[in-house]
Amino acid sequence: MMTSSTTPGQTISLASFALPFPPPPFSPRRLRPPTTSSSSSSSSSTSALFESYPYPPSHSRDRAESYLSESYPRFCALLSACPAALDRMRESTSGYAVFAPSESAFDGLGDERLGLLDAAIERCVGGGGGGGGGGGTTTTTTNAMTAALLSTVVEYHMVSAPMTSEIMTAYGVVTTSVGEMPVEVAADGTMYVNGVRVVRSYQFEERSIVEYRDGRGNSLGTVEEGAGGRGGGAAAGGGGGRVCVVHEVDGLLCPDELWRVMYDQVFPSAAEARHGAM
Image 1 (tube, helix red, strand yellow):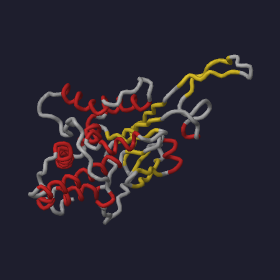
Image 2 (cartoon, one colour):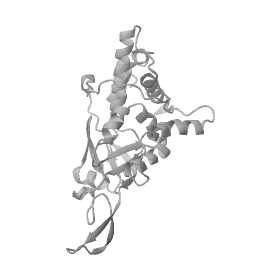
Image 3 (cartoon, one colour):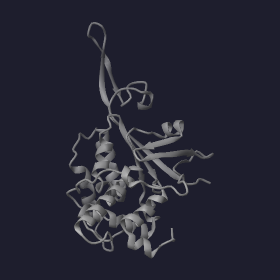
Image 4 (cartoon, helix red, strand yellow):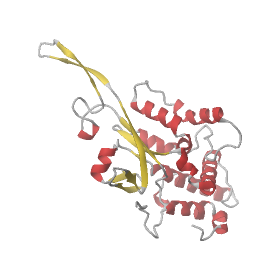
């Protein structure tokens, strides 16, 4: 039986979180399912996250992000509310790995936590100040705290390196910008990160056509090479372009303590109403 790595009594220091950042110029998809049919509008608002970053169709990052927007719309709603975290991941020259919770993983959160994430996204994107008290200074401070906490939730699902399943198995740990998460492999081969099951993984590599010549300049033929070069992948330290990996997971990787902090620091009135329930 796999268990979460959350340490009892663990505290989250807001001082270590990212500074506030301006909201993105678009509205993210809500995390809770809409009451009316609006699939076309939801899809367009989610895909807008990537439309401002055009790359050739063969570019690994473009293909990975297109796949994310199509297959994990609610996770992309979180990404859209945290552009600074997304940009930091994109800056990696070797590529990145994303742990994308499935749609059923969000359903499993329940209405309470989905509502909490929705409210946090609305506050970050729309600048709303509900639940943080009166006054402009208080509202600004609360919004900054909300942005930092939401960014932390997202960054538990990002690694600025192409962490494949093979690499995770070899190292036994995944290191993100906000902490380390243990990797466990069950007897049947099922992988768990921070106690959450990895359902499947997808790898997107940049490929190029390389022409080899002899000492006289005569062509010896062409070879299609991936990001790691011929005879070795990125894990082997080969050269080449980015490798982007998407791991689908059946839950969120952030520790339970982070949810408590979101209630206590950002939505204190809701925390008082449910004191002790978590």
